[in-house]
Length: 315
Image (tube, rainbow, N blue to C red):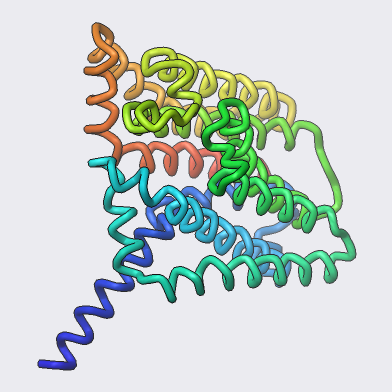
């Protein structure tokens, strides 16, 4: 009985560690970083090289650390939210010692691996990008900077550390060549993902407003946030069209796949928008109710670009 009890406690602890690290976004991270990596390869074999494995490990550990770092410093805020109080409960379950281990050891690991990768490639641009991402992760969550509270800095931080730097880091480290249209394609992906990210942060509109946290959603209001989210997604689609038309003029399949995956989330956001059009309160309730679908939408849009990029590269 004791062994079974210990096993159950350990299983519960591991589950809470996954929650605090926001493991539900793992597919998104994988798709985003691979989308950048595959643009700078000549064959799929390169994805199994030491460089590729290091990139993959570094970005994932950095993302997990960024998530648990934010969860830790948003503890009091998440505790008040009926949607996100599971995150504060995960911190309670993990305990102070393990939290300290994760917060201290994980950045040491991914920064050390980042330094190793840059040394092997004899190119330290990737390490600089990693350090920039680490700074913005800390600045976003922790006082006295707490960019999360500071409007445009909130947007800039999330755009960089989640949507733009991971695929660029993968792209830069997989090769030495840089193609402007590859960068524009990555930028398009970042706009789409940030559009969905803005929609996701609107889940916390009431809680953030009560705590005087000036997120973009609080500044804009629920309805305008959804509209801006849709416009950002359209900007991303426009960049897909411009980039793929130049990169793959004789094969429109990559363009069709990337747009199709993106339109799934775009379509549902429009439906929810008109369902709650008459009241911002109703619209926020609809967003909260369907919050669990957002990681799926993000994953579908990211994987559609990954598949499109693979078809483009392997043409």
